[in-house]
Length: 191
Length: 168
Image 1 (cartoon, rainbow over the protein chains, first blue to last red):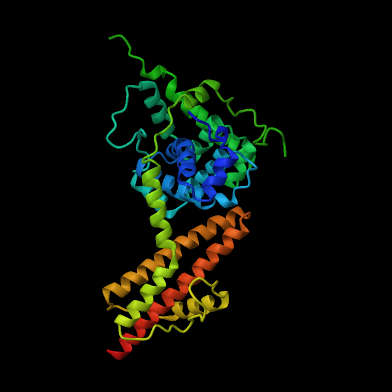
Image 2 (cartoon, rainbow over the protein chains, first blue to last red):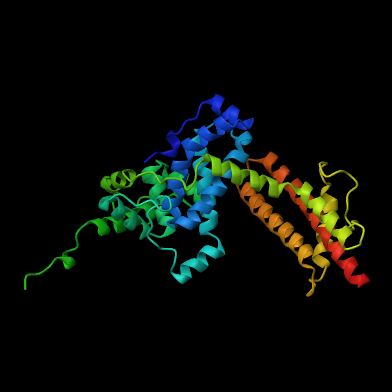
């Protein structure tokens, strides 16, 4: 899994993209798109929604490239835009309505349409385990474990306290551990 | 706060399991739904939709088709590329809010109204996002200017609708 914060883009490439050079823009898109889409997919856990948010995020990245000051790697900057889009969606009345219909917890793998997934039971199981968490817990786990954000950074993004981030992570770990560890009650007793 | 009640130091929080993090990091990247070619086409379409100049022309054309002059109460004297003065847009918005919704409408005119209203709503969303980040004053100004232009265009179309309703 590519960490967005590790995606550094050469200054010349960014300058080219700002002036509208298609080659520079294509290379930046190729560098950012997989990580950005992965982040969005794992937070919202729904392919159709993820595609909408991905498009909005990538368009915002290119439209606001003039405002990028280079204080953080470009990947990290794009990741923050993606996260803000995801949080806006998760807080929206539309998402809450979807939750009430019970359709938001679909377990999906994120391959292009028509592509058959390769056999990867372990990966699929992790995807299912992740999808069993609440969207907020999923976002916290993903940002902390994969993207390497600190509790302080997560708390700032959510507009909450550090203890919110810590407790979300701890509960999510508890739930994920229960998912992966064999349960005593599920073992087959001899008849 | 007592240390045993402080959530930051509460002893009952389980220690994160490093193996879970490893499992998550081992997941493959998600392949994006389309490549740069398709993305750039979509980006160009969005920019085209956001450009208020064609919409202003459309508003004027619709007003002419309806047989009325394209002169809304808030129309500014400057060309489309000039920044619209905020008070004019505010007047136009107040005027728009005061107008009743008509039950019987012409489809092409109503489509233009709906399109403009959608774009204003999209810019409102962006303004909220930019306002929350509090670090993009330049972007905020651009969005506010675009919004003011769209409100003006909407006022022109709605004014034409009202005039035509009065004639009929």
